[in-house]
Image (cartoon, rainbow, N blue to C red; front, top):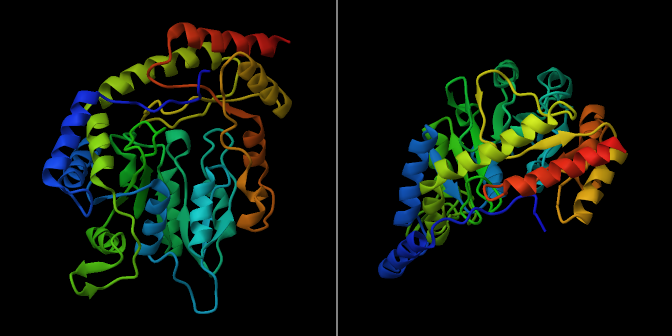
Length: 366
């Protein structure tokens, strides 16, 4: 079976050397030397400052909300944050879990990112933040979102889980917003098995978050913040260092796969529109079909032939009852119903990919 994605496993001998070092030092967690090294190297590789490693991408979001005061509101009122319904459930559920009501605004029909034109109508006196998503690594309209946030004195936290290494107009996309969060889950372009990171605009927010990820503890007998355990451990960091060493090789292989899809499918299926100045990371290859029926049929045909494609993201989150009732958002609902993410990973062979494309074209012709 060809999966929709496959974890990138780096050189085993190099990983073993890092693990030997962990055994020698007997230091497994609590800001160990490998976590410190990975922090420095990621800041350098990504071209950012104020990066904080955490144990997973969902906690990255929750720590960012807390550090930036999104959970705060007028006494007796529930804080709110405006976000997109076209995203992975964690973007919205992490808000809800933290006592912040997600308020959905519809997406752009071409980029599939949060449409700035829909944000202001959703703002209320309880709105604390905007939480856009760089969907599939595509850049949101960061300039328009920043202008709205300044006008209404709102925080901006980007869910940049898919945007590792993406540059926009010559600099890291992660520099936009008050914070940008990353997921280092096993299936991501860069991973630490499980893990995540936050890139803060301001150093003071980073310093507050550092306390939060270690229960608020600042010394042997000092607790200064309400915190939680969100630390990355040394084994995660070891994996990340090995993956980072091979990142250019991985990117090059993924680019070949991505470009083959683009050449063979972009003329017959809707693909994601990207802004000028975007340096993409080839993390995903989503396509949108003419109808939900066609998308479901193609997915079934692929599965019958040993290929897994994913309806990602489905459903549109305004339809998820536990997040709170809300109005339909027709663009998100339409895209979510007709989308499939096709298999993309460094090891996908040309013959396997050709078979995937032929199966899709065969189904479209029926």
